[in-house]
Length: 111
Length: 113
Image (cartoon, rainbow over all chains, first blue to last red; front, side, top):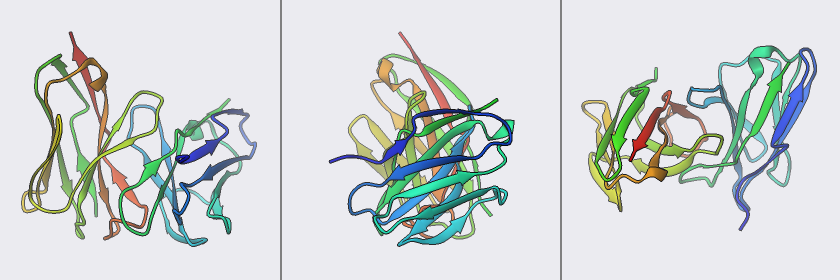
C-alpha cells in the first residue's frame, strides 16, 4: 500500500510568488493535516481537514490556505512568499481514530 | 494552553541506554505521541501513551505520568541508526484523531561508536 505521498519533493520560488503543494493520503484516510517544519525545530500545525471541511487552523497568516478534494487529497497554497516561508512542509493523514502517518514532505526554498 | 519541552541535543554510545524526557502543560490532555525523524525524512510513529505507566516495544519504551505532566522515551541497545531527532507531541485540541499535533522542538540524538 502506498503511504502518504507529497509533491513536489523540492521547490525553489522567488519572494512574492505563489506556491501550491499537494498531498495524497493513505487510502481510506479521510483526515489530512499540514505542518511547517523549519530547520532545527519541531513541526508546526497549519491546517487540518476532515471530510473536506476545515477542522483546525494554526497560527499562520491568511497567505496560507488549503482545501481537500472529494478523493481526500489536499492542496496547501501559500501566497506572497517570504524568505521565512522556507521550510519542510509535511502532510499527515489519519483515520478517524489512531495515529498519524506523515509524508516525506516538500522542501520549499524561497530566494 | 500547550507547552512542550524536551532537551535540544543528547549524545550516547552505541550499545548503551538513553532516556529522552518530555514535559508538557495542557488543559485537555489526550495522550502523548513520540515520533522519530531522520534528517531530511518524514517523522515516523514510535508510540502513543494515554495511560500512566511504561509501554515497551522492542528496544524502545515510552513512559507517561499524567499527574506530573511528564513522559520519557527509553532507547536500549543503541545502534548507530538510532541517530535521529525524537519528537514529543500532544494532540492539543482534546482528541487523538483530529490532526492537530503540538510538537516539541525535538531532541537530536547522536549515537557514537
